[in-house]
Amino acid sequence: MDKLKLYNGVEIPRIGLGVYMGLGVFENPEPEKTVNAVKWALEAGYRHIDVAAAYGNEAEVGEGIRVSGVAREEIFLTTKLWNDDVRAGTVKEAFETSLKKLRTKYLDLYLIHWPVEGFEKAWAVLEDLYSEGRIRAIGVSNFKRHHLEYLIKNFRIKPMVNQVEANPYNNNQELIGDCKNLGIVVEAWSPLGGSGGNLLGDEAIRAMAQKYQKTPAQVVLRWNLQRGVVILPKSLHQERIISNFDLSDFELLPEDMELMDGLNRNLSAGTEPEGVIH
Ligand code: A2P
Image 1 (cartoon, helix red, strand yellow):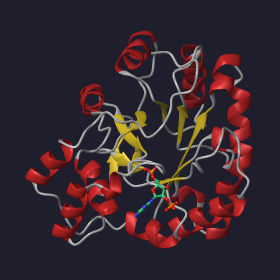
Image 2 (image 1 turned 30 degrees about the horizontal axis):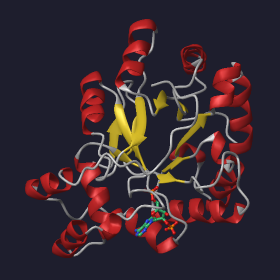
Image 3 (image 1 turned 90 degrees about the vertical axis):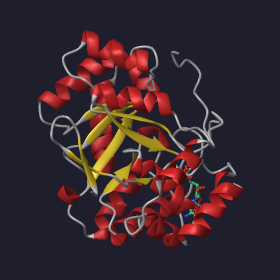
């Protein structure tokens, strides 16, 4: 229940900690925030951390893992290849840099962050790294159905994961259905609606939280889990990190799943960087 199986047999914990600090690309002025969040999450029982080269805090994730005392092999660790390296074709160099910062010899999952120009060539390099055993699973992020179909048609290895925005205000239902049909596991970024949004203040969500005696965040996260989506909530607060992981003692009824589905507004909590191929 607490893990899903990717099509290559690798197990992925269904709840991971997201660590994007909401700053510009490669900006990370308060390193201790990441170190603490990772340490608290691992103490709370998380065994899945989701970072990206562009978040600027891979070294702090590595440090958080180190100070937690949890063995590396117990943790499912993901990072992402940034757009500049996709465009420049410097995939191997970027991969080695990420490993060094994270202080690890391998990744559990490596994702192409956005489908920018050159993603096809980058995919071939990820395939090689996977075949060499340096990454346990490879995937993509923010890919639309046509990008996925292109890779499936033209390459040896089908992506194992697609990480996209998924929360009740932007539920991405159609793409999630497509991924399910293609055998690709979906991970949700901004499962709580992001830092600027007001999803958690939504009347319907607050009422549902009261009905189940849970927090708005917990009912929103539970909805995604019940759709079969891996969730990557982020928080800098220890009590929230703990409660966002505490989702196993209740279940949303079918009518409440439907109610949550009905809140969709196709309202994105994030922005797409310039140059993304649509
Ligand atoms: P904070 O770091 O101050 O806790 P998402 O994961 O959808 O991108 O959203 C993360 C945002 O939601 C963060 O700004 C985080 O802020 C906030 N957040 C995380 N967990 C909770 C929670 N349990 N209740 C309220 N807000 C939360």
